[in-house]
Image 1 (cartoon, rainbow, N blue to C red):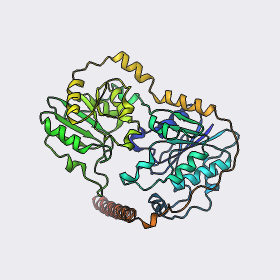
Image 2 (cartoon, rainbow, N blue to C red; image 1 turned 180 degrees about the vertical axis):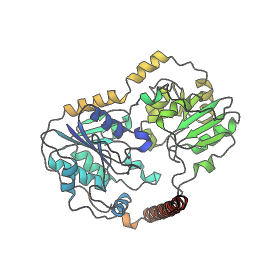
Image 3 (spheres, rainbow, N blue to C red; image 1 turned 135 degrees about the vertical axis):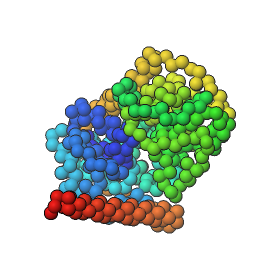
Image 4 (cartoon, rainbow, N blue to C red; image 1 turned 90 degrees about the vertical axis):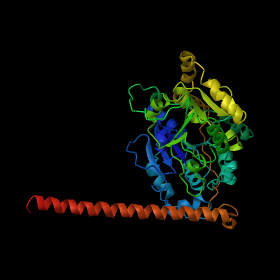
Length: 433
């Protein structure tokens, strides 16, 4: 098959840990032809031909119009989108599947163009977008999602709540997130984690940190209630200066923030942890997710204490707390648990991306290939976007960050050029020229 992913997640985000990337890699390993169209750009261009990574800019969008679309404002689309898509995604005689993971208006235009070429449209639902506006996200709207849901031959959801949300549609499957076990069971990694400060108990969390996925009042309570414990948070944090700064809100002598590290070294750091934590706010948005890091914690054979997220109910060695005091109690209980490795490994073997990809392929095989003309996708500004002050403010702040980043980039280039010139002069002097 020719399979095209249209994903909001950069190919290299979190070392490729996320769902669309894992599916794409596994399908390519099975000799399917895979193209990965990313909305968020990777830091470095991927060189492989399968999967082939393509950006929306490769398809003709410019950065400013993508930013305008991201905040729901009117934007200009490339006039030659169809031709560019055919260049990157030639269908040939193979069956074509377009898996769209983002109800983002430019992404829908890509999906529509692929459907016109004969691709079967699939919607892989990653989040409950109806809850994202409360988190300060402006990129998705319900008109776009309704279009995607109505015209997809298959809707794949990653949590029971999302399956229920889309239950009125004709073909909805639940395929949970999975885990790539290899990075967490590699004994050859010897990076030193001894510098982590240890306490009576040493607790760990990893992942990108935002105020919507960390329960700040809960963490403040448990870190202050147990000053003899040490808490380590590994990953990117305070990424948006317009949002609350977690490092300030959680500052305490026993709280330690660490920069992102390679996924391959997380297991080595986990050896220092008595318990891994998922202190996520229990909100409608988070209840619709399937926390990937819990699978990773378990792959390190660590017990997990989490807030009372219903989707974690059947996972082994995951202890859910109903409030802050119970969170402390569950940590103390979990720290005394002995992991039964054979049983846990048997469970994890059923949660791999290989198994999840089998489920996806089975669902795709059940589809009947058909050619149909889709109505035009929602395009342009979202309804009433131009009247919303907070949207304009967020857009302006984004443009300021882009301008600042470009100034830094130009300055770095100028410094590199100056240093290169000086170095060349020194070489000429030393060589007697």
